[in-house]
Length: 126
Image 1: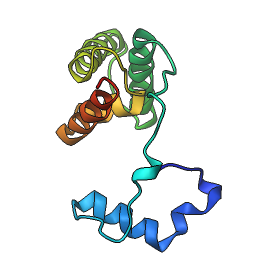
Image 2: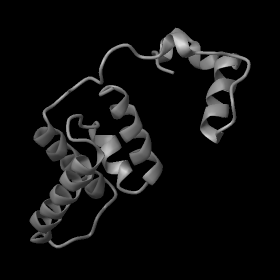
Image 3: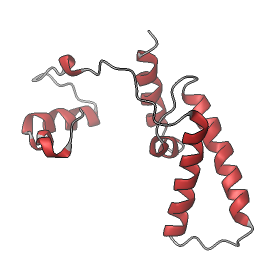
Image 4: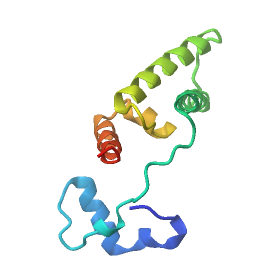
């Protein structure tokens, strides 16, 4: 389900029930949203290298916002480690499509995100 916050769809009890069932793996027998399946390929915001770099920059910024207490010379080492980790992660998800930065970072810690991204991207290759 997609849409803007202001369109009010998030307040629909029918859609809320549908989303809740989907999240916990229950079938949705009362409503069929098949007509609303996306018809365009996933959008590409940045090229792969720039997206990976942006993911690293956002992660580093989050660390400083959370008051990381690290020695100055460790910045480059952490940056390089994250760059390698995220590059490997992106390449393991798909050879063509690159997820947005937040999904790259979260997918490193949640196998379900990886599975869903792979399934989503593979649908556009059939």
